[in-house]
Image (spheres, rainbow, N blue to C red):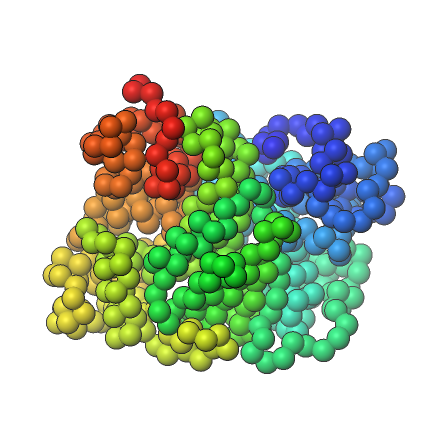
Length: 497
């Protein structure tokens, strides 16, 4: 799998295209000069002639070269390339900038700009532009424009939203600017992408398909979620390869999301409630993080495979709601998974709002930060939560409700973890666990986890946190994936160095 900065091997790319190899889905795109279209490697159209093919690491590069996205394989469904570097400062800066641009939650109501992006990263906008173009081949705004247009393309094809709402949901400031950008980039009007046929029946939801790179251990992912599933909020059927749950994006936007894995096709069919349609790009970004659809198994296994040779398909389970995950992490401190599930169910029943859904068993939303910030100690104590957990939940809820703390992919991980650890009842383990699942930090490592300490010990006895960290140094920058593998099965052979 090529890295974002490495030149593509055109012959190797062509072989992957001819084989429709899903392992390379999203790792590069193929532009066909005879048609002016660019595709994913898994596209099922007739393989073009080699001399008509150009290869690009990113969709934005293909669009910058004048190619339009394929209407059949739909490049917006491809898993993204989330490379990580622990040493190359320029590559790391460009990767962080791209992740921020790709994360709708990172911006809220703000409009992304190069100046704002540079300020968040602590560099000048001139330096950011230079590094971004050198590493990724396009400017930051060209990158963002491609993401917005592909998001709009998805909304146009899969929803009945009015064009003006599509423009706003995709991040365009006005319908006029959207129409002009769409026509200039794709040489067609937005209405040309509207699919024929009637709109889906009310309640059926919007259906989109998201790809992932194999291998993917679907059973392990769903079993992990099922063991922690909260009645009323989540429904998981391991045998049917399905997971569904309720979701609140803000006080006025809530609904449900239902996913069905199709392992043979290396994809997930996602149904989203119509109420969430105006926020579809944001929802799908969260689904990708929740199910870890953008992971690159080849890059990760190259680092971890010597110690975990049979577990290349394991992913790091994420979350659709960072606040919810943080509360569940607090409740799960020093108790069993079953006990934490029981306590969380009581919390949902007491403070979570009801929600009507077409899915049996989905009927409640997780409590809002405001609701838990306003809860009294007596109310929380009646649920079985001890005083220390009560104080931690209230402080966490207040920090999130006031906007002092944001818990989603794209935030400054180190600063957010430091802020978490200033709250009462939140220590290293809880902050690391939140970083692993909610902040989507691939190098998160909860060294204080008892199960992890036992798994990493050659004799099955608990290691100290310091010893566990020492053992894990060679797994950087993928220690979060090593944690999941160690929980599932201890390493086959660990050196003592």
